[in-house]
Image 1 (tube, rainbow, N blue to C red):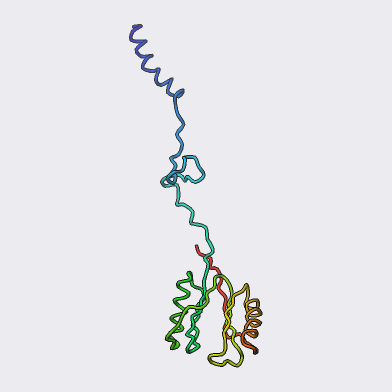
Image 2 (cartoon, one colour; image 1 turned 90 degrees about the vertical axis):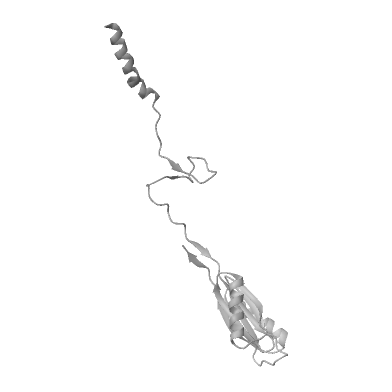
Length: 169
């Protein structure tokens, strides 16, 4: 009887000792490779909801001008997401006007730009001026003064435009 009673007690010992050795189970975490579990970069794994969307950011925009010196045609572009795209668009427009030897001559990023030429444009002896600035007024004032100095006569703004960053989600 004592033997069977001690056998029953021995069977119950694991039930009494189990709470002493219990380990608390934490929710499983999904961490990026190389990040230690418990870091703020880790997210709960599985069914806990979708990850938050990426924060919005500002994307820079470009503008450009391409000119055919022989004809005086100038193609422009604005609001492009790369310098290459801005130049390509300006070249396409210059060639679309009939320019044969169009070349990119000016580009700008998140800024304003102007083309200034003499009021009395004389083919071959007039120099156009391309400038950028924080505003059309800033770019114009610098370009008008420089154009007058270069050409020896009054000048006017023939083109102005600005590019601004775009909020991207």
